[in-house]
Length: 383
Image (cartoon, rainbow, N blue to C red; front, top):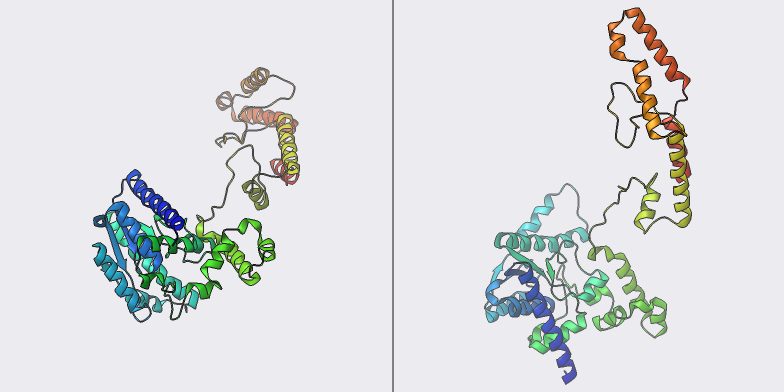
């Protein structure tokens, strides 16, 4: 490692250490828990946590799958914890995994191996909840950008400690702080099945993958034109696009709450979500609103007897075109005097029937709105 590389590694390590320390202080947490596999990512994360929080505030949990996880990795994890004087617990996942064999459906390979990662996440969060601790994620930037991780499994964490480091940077910092060679030279693997390695699944070495990821803004064709392996370039871009959801919060289906917004179908709603409708759609929506307003202003409304009026939906007084609000209210009051239901109740049954008949004739003489037709018309114009 050159002098310049050492200075660069020291600068990055210092930022990570103080960044983690600051986050815990600002959020009033002292304790952290980490899943330790004996790999380079979890080992570096452990060391940063110890330097930032103190070894007394860090707990490591070893969660091997007996028969699949390497004994070498288990041994190295124990040695690290003992060397750093960190509390650790051993919890194999075999028994927990066995319970999924009773599911009423047959698991495929993807579901089975991802369940292993998710069980480890459950164990970590069980400990974190019990001891008021935060879970430290051990994924690096290269893995996150291509989605090489299990959602709600190894990607589940409260703090991503090294997620802004490419895998090649992880190696440089690990070398700088003195991580043992047997860990540095070990082939990266999630050990979810026999013979698994990261680079075999990703289709290339991390050095080449990082070179692509650092220049993704240039696009696939330009990177291929620069002489990069075309198959690897296309695979990296494909994985980045396909697995982008893993680094995002779950998608929220949007709804419209603005009374001024008229959304008549799902396509309108998604136009709004994408950043608003086109200028043409805006014009059509405005025209629709104006038409609806004109219709409402020109047609008198009748309030149903015995039904509470709905605010902002059914007007509570008669609207008369070309008159002021005061004149409309005065006319409404006058009509109320002419047809007084209390007075009708005091008259004979015959007189009451006559008065009701007159009231019905007055109402029927006035043009009545057809709400269903108005809504249909406004709906068609706004689509």
